[in-house]
Amino acid sequence: MAKKKFSGIGTQEIAPRVSEFKRFRRVFLSRGLVVFGVVIILIFIIVAIFAPFLAPYDPYMPDLKARLSQPNSTHLLGTDSVGRDTLSRIIHGTRTSLMIGLIVVSVAAIIGMCLGLIAGYLGGWLYQIIMRSVDVVMTFPMILLALVIAAMLGEGIRNVIIALTVGLIPVYARLMCGQVLALKENEYILAEKTIGASNLRIMIGHLIPNALPTLIVVMTMMLGTTVLAEAGLSFLGIGIEPPTPAWGSMVNDGRQYLLTHPVLSFAPGFAIMLLVFAFNMVGDGLRDALDPRLRGLL
Amino acid sequence: MLAFIIRRIILAIIILILATMLVFFGMRFLPGDPILMVVTANQQQEFNEEYLLELRHQHGLDKPMIVQYFNWAGDILQGDFGTSILTERPVAEEIFRRLPISVHVAGLAFVIGHLLGIPAGVICAIRRGKWLDTVITTLANIGITVPNFWLGIILMYIFGLSLKWLPIMGYTSPFDDFWLSTKQLVMPVICLIIFPLAGVTRQARSSMLDVLHQDYIRTAWSKGLRERVIVIKHALKNGLIPIVTLAGMAVATIIGGGVIIETVFNIPGLGRLAVSSVISQDYPYVQAISLFVAVAVVFANLIVDIAYGWIDPRIRYE
Image (tube, rainbow over all chains, first blue to last red; front, side):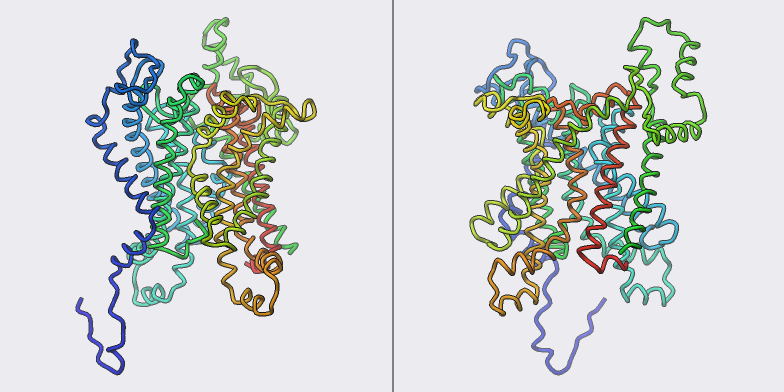
């Protein structure tokens, strides 16, 4: 669409239009910790994609001759009780954590967004049903909810994903509903209605795009929360089945050898912390760049 | 104010009733047959259909769901939470034996977390950008990322195994041996508060920063009031509003953390019982614990809502 050129008094003094993307980039990358977070996440993504090439050993291959070896030049982080290389298992565990985090957060965000949109925009009894259900699910701490669901469905990555998604949907539904309730009071929504726009058009064309920055910020932060929750479940022995490398269960396995081989527990836990820290920092940066009003709320 | 409180109480009761339904029907629609687990657990009995039916009848599992729900809800109102499928002992007995332990640990964590977090956040806000602010903010950022079970293991390694200052696990009632009880609780409480403490500190800092930029604070400065008066009398009350909301969430966070931390430190509370009964699919326990958690969280949120209405009069007239 061609921009109409203004010609009138004082137009020369109007500051040049700042590119939205440039502004975003400037604010986003202005803090060192945010840049650090971006770099860490990129490294983790690369590690996850190229895990088989980067890992020095097969993460599943036991080597009974090299059981519980201390960190040395062949096994940089030592080996576990059946002689599997700790570093290789951490590298492969990156895949588990990132994959579960991404799937859970995206699915929960999409479902939660739809529920919140319907509740907030259409209101009435739909609002009551959806938001009361959200209240009810939120009375249970996420880890407890996921624990019960995962235990009943049985072990396995798919069930962990379902359990965590159910726990996370209410967060997005509540957030989206709040956003929509505020947005729909705007005059441009009234204007759209006046020209006969359908509800669907208003929802897809206006409400979702306007709520999206906030949702993206929360999604990033929830990636950290999800990684932590998944690690917690695996730690309790209810998440991923044993041979699959998962950071949480590695921390738990290492507990028995804490006195002699602390690295078995320390190393995977540090990986969890680093990844969660990176997600939180990037979330902070995105918040400042996309939706500074959220400062203090998130 | 009274109308506001009554409205909130009614809402809380509705949520609680819905929560009981979620717990009850949720447990039944999920796959996994608890009766089969009992049978395979104690194999001395002959494994036949008739016996299974008999067992189902004994536990009331052959009636329609709705009937089962109302029976269950009616029993609970009379303090009967059913009997454990595995141990065949009354659930209420075990729960009430363990409840004080969890309340002790979680209560300490809640109180200490807020006693430390609020002043820390306020100090950061007043001394924004100074070294103390940088140190506390960095610690708080790390605090919300550290996995609590991992922190527990690190503390165990340092203070329990290497330095031998603290016992690595267990729980003693403070009435039996106060000193031992306190020593045993140091590490679990640190693990439990780390997340809410970091959250409260961050929240207190940012909401105080918001308030300190308001016009009426500038007015207070220009009147020549002392800093302490401005911070405590003028800024803190408004700055506390968001923290009060967070307090409700902190209750849920600490309970959730308790599930893991009680397992790590071998504390015989409700959290550990939740994990072990979830694994053994002893669902009368799982139901009862979920219910207690729901009551605790709903009650905490009710208090938060009322406190919120009391601090911020605008809320009452929503």
